[in-house]
Image (cartoon, rainbow, N blue to C red; front, side, top):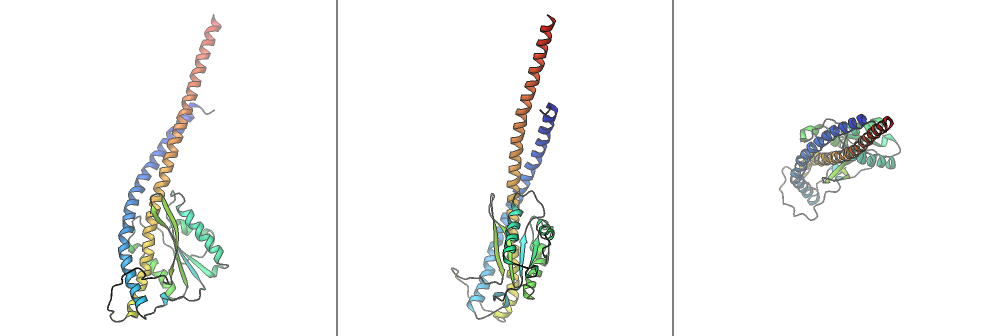
Amino acid sequence: MASLRDIKSRITSTKKTMQITKAMEMVSASKMNKAEQNAKNFVPYMNKIQEVVASIANGTDASHPMLEEREVKRTAYLVITSDRGLAGAYNSNILRNVYQTIQDRHNSKDEYTTIPVGRIGRDFFKKRDMPVEHEITGVADQPNFADIADIAKQTVQLYTDEKIDELHIYYNHYVSAITQEVTATQLLPLTNISSEGQSLTSYEYEPNEEEILEVLLPQYAESLIYGALLDGKASEHAARMTAMKAATDNADELVGDLTLKYNRARQASITQEITEIVSGAAALE
């Protein structure tokens, strides 16, 4: 049986750990609220730019390579993960999903490439010797578009230059503080732009629809990447908050168990001392 000193030391260290996890839980909760608001504030912009793109794409005869499917020779996977751990299954769920998809769909490394956002994803792909086209780490907890503008433009340019023929984005969609869903979306080509259920505004195009699409479609694709990043950041903070709450609760339960064990050991020690005293006194009589 562990000594009283060992048990007391474990109680002290567990309480200190609990203080750290509690603080991390509170910090993540604060970040989550702000990240959730950022994601919601971005929705009106996304809806409006999608409306304009849908109006041109579906209401005119204008065409653009980003709207047209072509033979898929190489696929890119943009994967949004975090730079730090301690977020429960946030990273493992999405990486397992992407990895399984790649294994099922491709027979050669020439058929695909990856674009990881976050250190966890980058290390995962490099450790398995999987191709990495571009990477970005150190994204802020509350990112601005400028933080990922370069990688967004480079990713879209890969499709424009026909270095890839398909682009999929994987991220955790924020549902609630305790629920995040792994989401996979085909980003390019933009074949799922629909005006169904929308009352489209009538626009006059100057100089013409093709030139407007030439500018607007890359911006739209880049904004989809940014929107997914905002959604992913809200999910990351929520997952970390939940994980730290679970760690705090487990530590609190462990402290209770150790305290009970300590009291029992102390009681047994006192009982033994009393027994020895009584036995000694009886021997002197």
